[in-house]
Length: 63
Image (tube, rainbow, N blue to C red; front, side):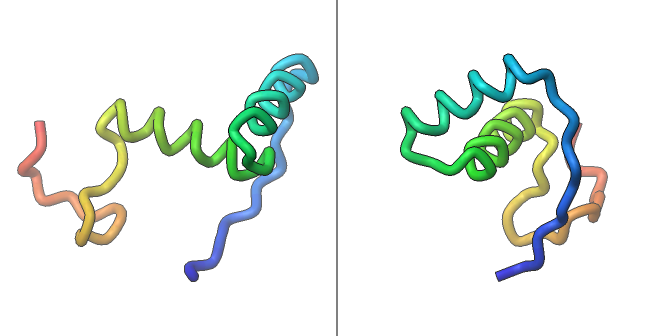
């Protein structure tokens, strides 16, 4: 498994509480839920690298 980046997060307590409830509903840890939310947002925005291509590699073939 690839090493994970640790990052301290400052967040409004109401937002964190809502995220914890959502995580519990999905049977995920708070950390896994936060990663899922971020990954989903990045995917929707077209910001995740294509599978099979290293992160940060830009071939110029995308709009």
